[in-house]
Amino acid sequence: MSLKNVRLEVMQFLEKDVDSLIQKYLIPVETIWQPSDFLPNSESDTFFEEVKEIRELSKELPYDFWVVLVGDMITEEALPTYESWLMDVEGVNQVERNGWSKWVRHWTAEENRHGDVLNKYLYLSGRVNMREIERTTQHLIADGFDIGTDRDPYKNFVYTSFQELATYVSHNRVAKLAKDKGNKQLSKMCKIISGDEMRHHHAYSEFVERIFAVDPSQMMLAFQYMMKQKITMPAHFLRESGDKISTAFEEFSNTAQRIGVYTSLDYVEILDKLIKRWEIDKITGLNEDAEKARDYLMKLPTRMLRLADRVKIPENSYQFKWVEPAKL
Image (cartoon, rainbow, N blue to C red; front, top):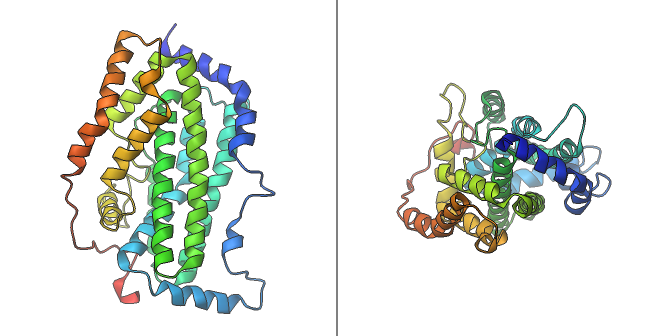
């Protein structure tokens, strides 16, 4: 039987548990937070006063902070790309509406709130060039992405396990920076987004655990494959208007590293956490290739840590069209 058919069988075998996983990790629409919980109520008589407060508090936030907040928001707003990608994964059948496609739709519905609340906040803040941001978002969705997973569910679940934890780190750090500058409302907003990302990380990590239990060798090889090629950030094609594809991503990444929101050390720590979470050192029944893959993965954090220590970040801020220093 081909690897593709084996993966499809495993996905079909695990599908019976998806409803219980939705109940475990996702929150019903009636009880989960909504963007309006953190934004001024446009129906209220105090709306303009609340907007004025947002604009005043936002003056305390530095240039690099705004760049990272904008980049995080654009990354969240490119959700159509992520949903369409996951809907095409082997075993996810959106035509027959199976359990996996139900998961993807429910996950998408939760994620959709993140870009929504950040977008509205940025608009109300008066500190950023929304038209440039909107053009970047449109480019990112139109350009799509290639995260190197193909339609393989094993590789995709390694990616989402890693990426959801990375977004947790990023939003959580932004929340702390906002709090340190006295912006409690923005801090709460980013903190609650990070909480969603952590729940989603635990969900996708459990998907991987369940695959390890039934197809350990191929799951180990998929893990190794993803880490050898490195986890590509979902906004790796980021560009501003008039620029070529990917030209803004490196500068956005440099900015995030410079203010400590997401660094090369965080990348290594996330890898280490996944290795420990999945207890790959204890997995049995591996074939020879998978044993070699495990050895590679166990040594990888130490190797990557040495490389991370050598990373040099430019001290000066790159001038983005999204954020105009004169307005800050």
